[in-house]
Amino acid sequence: MAEREQAAGLWPIKRALTVASITAVTGLVVVMTAVLAVLGFPHLQHNKALSLSQLLDVLKLVLGTVAGVGALFALVTAYRRQRLAEAAHDYAQRVDAIQQAHQERLARNAEHDAAERRITELYNAAAEQLASDKAPVRLTALYTLERLANDNPRHRQTIVNIICAYLRMPYIPAPADRPGPEEEHRERARRNAARYRAVRDLRPAPTETQHRGSDPHEEHQVRLTAQRLLATHLRPDAERHWAGISLDLTGATLTDFTLINCTVHHAILSRATFSGDANFDGAAFSGEARFDRATFSRYAGFDWMTFSGDARFDGATFSGEARFDGATFSGEARFVQATFSGNVMFNGATFSGDADFEDVTFSKYAGFDGATFSGYAGFGEATFSGHAGFSGVSFSMDADMTSATVVDAAGSHAPPPGWRIEPTEGGEGRFIRDPAHRGSV
Image (tube, rainbow, N blue to C red; front, side, top):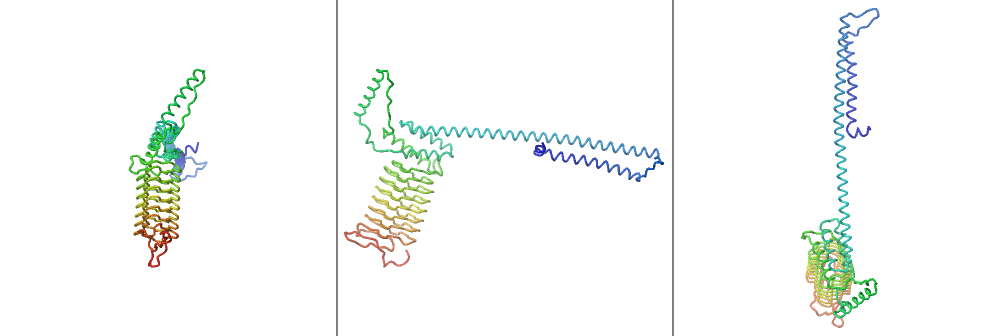
C-alpha cells in the first residue's frame, strides 16, 4: 500500500500533513508557555488562591487557545482531505493513462503481428506458386512478391532471395526437347483413349503428369520477368528502389541479363551462365562481387562499373567482347586463369588494390590503355594472341610480366613500362625486362 501511495504521489502529502499536525501541537505548547510567561510564571501555593479576575483572564486565554488550536486542526484536516482527494484524482488519471497506453500498445502489437502473418502467408503462397507447372501462375507469384517487397522494406531481402532461388533452378534455354506437332497429336490421342477406357471400366481417370519446363518458351518469359523485376528496383532512380540488396545467383542460367546503373551490396554470380548479352554498365557493387568460373556466351559489359569490394573473375570464360573501360576496382581484382576469346578493354580502368591477371588467355585485342594500377599488377604466364596494349598505363609498382607471352612478336604491341617483347621460335615472343628503361615505373 505504501509503495502504491508513494508511486501515486500520496506519501509526500501525508508526510507533510503529519508535520503540520505536530506543528499545531507544538504551537499549543508554545501558547501555554506564553500564558505562563504573561502571568510571570506564578508559583501556586496551596494556601494562596487566585483572585477572580485572574481566574477569568486565565480562563479566557485557555478558551481562546483551545478554540484557535481547534480551528487549526479543522483547517489542517480540511486541507488534508482536499490534498488526498486531489492526489487520488491524479492517481486515477495516471492509472487510466497507463491502462490506455497499455491497451494501445497491445492493439499495435496485435495489428503488427496480424500484418506480419498476412505478409508471411502471402509470400509463402507466392513461393509455392513459383513451383506451379503453369507459367501464368508463376508470373502472378512474381508480381505478388514484387508488390510485397514494395510495401514492406524489411522483407525485401527475403523476397529477393526467393526470386534468386527461382533463377538458380535448373533451366535449359534451348527448346531441343519440345515435341513436334505430330508427336503432340499422338500423345493427345493416347490420353483421350486412356480416359475412355477408364470411364468404360468404371475406373478413376489416369493422372496426367505435367513436367516443369515442358514449354521452355513460357519458362523463358517467366525468367525474363524475374530478371526484369530485379533490374527495375535495384536502380537508385526507380520509383520503388530496393536499397542495400545482395544477390546470390550462384550457378544460375541468365538470359540477356542486365543490371545497368543498379546498386547492389554483395553480388555472388559464381558459375553463372550468361546466355545472350550481359550488361552491368554503370552499376555499383558496395560489397564483394564474385564471377569466378562464370560463362559469358556473348557481349559482357562492365564499363564505368564501381567495385568497392573485392572483384573475382577467376576462371571466368568470355566468349564475346568484354569491356571494362573506366571501371573502378577499389579492392582486389582477380582474373586468374580467365579466358577472353573476344576483344577485351580495360582502357582508363582504375585498380586501387592488387590486380592479378596471372595465366589469363587473351585471344584477341587486349587493351589497358590509360589504366592506373596503384597496387600489385601481375600478368605472369598470361598469353596474348592478339594485340597487347598498355599505352599510357600507370603503375605505382613494377608490373610483373614473368613468363607472359605473345603469339605474334611482330605485332604492334605496346608493352608496359620497363618491359619489352623478345621474339622466340615460331614468331612468338615473350616479355622481358627492358634494361634501357630508366627510372621508377
